[in-house]
Length: 60
Image (cartoon, rainbow, N blue to C red):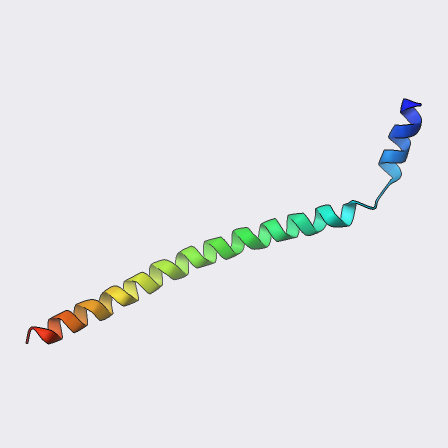
């Protein structure tokens, strides 16, 4: 009985696609988070430069 259930479980491939999609979604999410972190730092630096330029132009 247990051996038959184990064989059936090992031969069933219907859930494999869902697992693959889950792994792909996880990898894509990690890549997006890393890219957004780098982009946000760059964007923050750009806004800081613009703010400093406006502040220094206003004091002249």
